[in-house]
Length: 323
Image 1 (cartoon, rainbow, N blue to C red):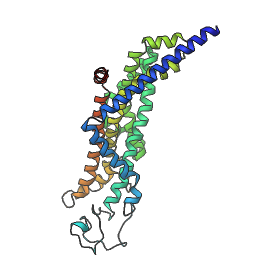
Image 2: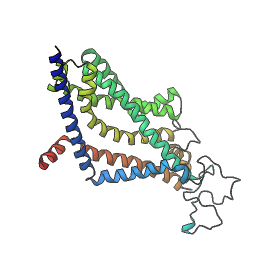
Image 3: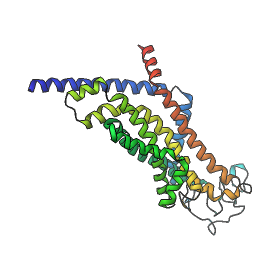
Image 4: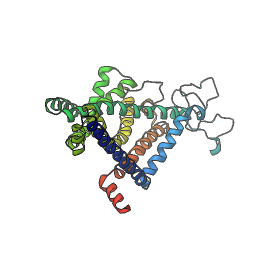
């Protein structure tokens, strides 16, 4: 019995070592492929800039994001940007993106809005991934009536229009940024659950899974140690694209007054507050709109690059050419 257990442990350890070696080689090849793609490099560059702006926002912003400047300085032509380098008189306070309708510095609010938008994207996707991966893995691994119940619930969520369901959930829960993020996370869950379930169904009968089962591995060890790692590549792509979608959808809810509430410096809220200034002060609408577009574009470019880099056919072809 001791000899059998020793052989089984050595065999299992060897399989783990080989798997780790192949995984490391795969990820190195994936990174090399990723940095060869211009779209991914552009997306990463934009995201690095956004992260730096968010990190150093308190040091870059000349004012507090919610500070009303009436009585603090002599405000003239409050809607127009004032940049000394471009001819604005030096006796006027500099506001490179102008002042909003409540006489607050738009540049400072944009910087702090970067923090909020990035936090929204990562928080929403994290919640959706946790719920989706849990439900999808249970459904795929258990099968039978458990699979039917979970996936029919996902089908019910998918039966409703994405944005209308999010609006309905926020309406029930109450307008706030937290409830908007929760609503977007809930309606995003089926996509992650279906991807994980498909991976589990395709892998759970594989030979190495059967070998682990024969060696006495528990269901948790098989599911989390042998099956779910195969779902990581498609999940990475889906998560990257989902972050941009979450930022855009939450900004849309805030624009409608269902997300972040004033005076929170969130880009969607800034758009909604200044939408009536489109013709008199178009920069107040243009600036947050461009920020949202650039952020979503950056995540989409990175997601497209990751999808190509993680394509098994392309990775295998690259590995074969190298050998």
